[in-house]
Structure formats: C-alpha cells, structure tokens
Amino acid sequence: MSVTNSIKEVSIKNLSKIFGRGAVKPGESYGAPGIGSSTAISVFTSITLIFLWWFITNMGWIEPLFLPTPEAVLKKFADVSSEEFAGSTLWGHTKASLFRVFGSFFLACVTAIPVGIAMGVNRIFRGIFDPPIEFYRPIPPLGYLPLTIIWLGIDDVQKITLIYLAVFAPMALSARAGVRSVTIEQIQMAYSLGASRGQVIWHVIVKGAMPEIITGMRIGIGFGWTTLVAAEMVAAEAGIGHMVLSAAEFLVTDVVIMGIFVIGAIAYMFDLFMRFIERKVVPWKGKM
Image 1: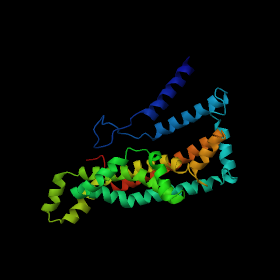
Image 2 (image 1 turned 180 degrees about the horizontal axis):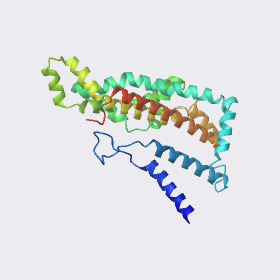
Image 3 (image 1 turned 45 degrees about the horizontal axis):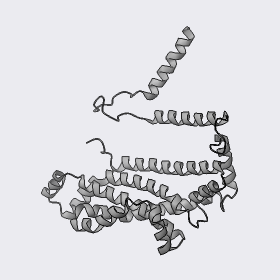
C-alpha cells in the first residue's frame, strides 16, 4: 500500500506541476485571469489526443476507412513526399497552396490595413468602404466562387482573388477597430505637444492600433486557409486542397488526414510567428 500511495503522490505532484498556475511574478495581481504559461498543458493535451487516436484505431474500434492509424498516415506522408498523388508530390501541392494563401495575404496586408485605418480616421473613407465590406463579409466564399470564375477564369488569379476577398474584410475591420481603440486623451496629448495630424496618425493612432491589426492578420490568414479548399475545388492541378478533395473522391482517408495535418501545421507555425512579432512590436499589450 505504501508503494501505491507513493506512486499516487508522485503522479499528483507531476500533474500539479503541469496544470498549476505557478508562482506570481512581481507586479502581477494574484488571481488575474489568464496569467501563467500554458505550454506544458498544451503539450500534455496533444500527447493525450495522439495516444487516444493510436489506441482507438489499433484496437480496431473504428474502421480504417473512417479513421486510419497514425502509422498509416505517417507512411502515406512518406509515400506522397516522394511519389506523385493527384498530379504532384506533397511538396508540389504545398508550394502551390503556400503561393496562393500567402500571396493573397500579402495583398490584403498592403490594402486592407490602410483601408481600415482610413475608415477609422476619416468619415468619408468610412462612408465609401463600410457598405461594400459589410455587405460581402457575411457571404461565404463559396457564394461568390461562381462569380469569380465567370469574371477571372479558372487560373491562379481567380484563386488568389477568392482568398484575398476572404482575408480582406477581417483585416480591414480589425484595423478600423484598432483605430477606434485609441483614446482621445492620447490624441489630445500629442496635439498639445505640437504634433501635426500626420504625426498623430502615424505615431499615436497607427501604433496604438497595432495590437488589433496583428490580431486581424492572424484571423485573416485563418480565413485564407479555410477558403483555400474552396479555391482549389475548380480546375486546380496542384494544391493541398486539391490533393485532399481528390483523395476524398477515392476514399483515401489517410491522405485526407495527412493533408489536414499539413494545413494545420503550417497555419499553426505561422500563428506562432505572428505571436512572436506581436511580442516584439507591441510589448505593452495586456500590460496597461
């Protein structure tokens, strides 16, 4: 019994280290919501989910047609990396999708963010851009997919345009919300120190709006990945979405899951990169 109790005590201590809040840092109020690192919890959750997936599939509780084993997915990952599937290798599909998503994302950054800032600082720009953005924003990309095909054909221009439209609205509205979050006291203080209107917009409004702008970029790239499959549904010769849809037609479930993991991994790595940029660009976020 003593050995069993010792094992239980060690297990409880290990779990408390993972899920415990940790020591309060200087300047933090005890019990503040969201304070503390969640990295260990995230790793523990991921390992648990992968183990459950392995256990359930290897026990034969779910047919491989519906959920293949992790080993089967890894084997298919190695196969598609060196052999063609649906017209290209995994790298070829990934490269095509990266070009479409990040090309659209870059175009949205250089257009949606200035438009959102202009909407926030000028009523004329708000009156011009607010109606069309608010009109098409709730419409799912599949709703205007046929129209983009009629207007632009079925090449990469159409696909990039479709993804761009999905990314544009959340980024523009986030930039506008960021402008509105800047307090009037900050603006008046800058004017009282002799700043011009241009200096106030750049040094006070734009920089004050950066947390919401970066959040909008993170949300926008997520919309881009969700629109990718719709964009690659029509006459695509390569792309992760094209690969997943082709595999689904022939019930190759391991390729479908592999494609989902590839999209999720790329999107997650980019989100981690954006979090790093956020910490560098707006280190004051959440500390004021």
